[in-house]
Image (cartoon, rainbow, N blue to C red; front, side, top):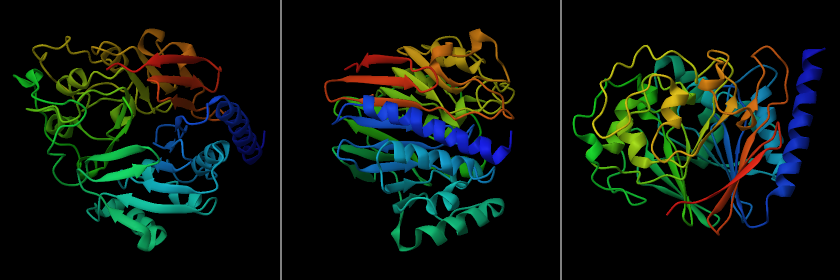
Length: 363
């Protein structure tokens, strides 16, 4: 099959499946869509008022695949523009789709961590600045973005992490003898991490933040409090993230992994060498098992079946995996979506299978 034609079919399929999801999302609910950018990151939020925010834009190239998938998700949600675009950092799998997306749909305000950049990433920063123009805001920890009845809060951006705990956070006993690690590369230290609150529902995503940044947020005080729904760091690879002192303290109820077939989840844990942290479950080097074994976690949902480690015991159940194909196989890029109601109920849906599961927010 012609590759361009296959990609077009994929976008049409995504739009069709997304339309069904949109029709099934009751009016007045907050919507979250994890767009399949195959190991990059792109999450689209739509407030009950219709206001929208996109967190990261996936990869460049490949026939503008990721920008097309984001655009299809926006159309599915009935959007004529995306009101806010937050870029976590200047790596290509997070900002790479922006230039193509800006030609497909109007983009409103832009937010980022600032002009700190490595030489290898400077061209991407310059491209972003040319698109954002005067609509750009440089974020700092503690800033908020009001969002149609919900609130985004910046947990970290370039400098120190938030100073005041949120969502019931406080002294963290898991920090006693907790293992520390050397910081990762500069971009993974600078990046924007976000929290979203909507009634009792609490979401967080730290992007590609590493173990050292997690520990700043977790110790000696847990600054994040508890989390209802968590997009796990570093695409689920957890090679130098997923610190037990953080994960066990925030007690996510549901985790979503924005991995690719051969990126993130399943990667060998070669760089992390830790002793077990007192008060937590024994340290588990297999990322899925570490997530699933974290206290409070009910389910883990995945963007892709891991082809690095496809052992069923090391992946989510099939009905919670949105895509099961390898890298070089054309597919529609199925999304995982969440619909969050004010009555403390939230429902996740897998576009590939139509499987849905409803949860009640823990207080």
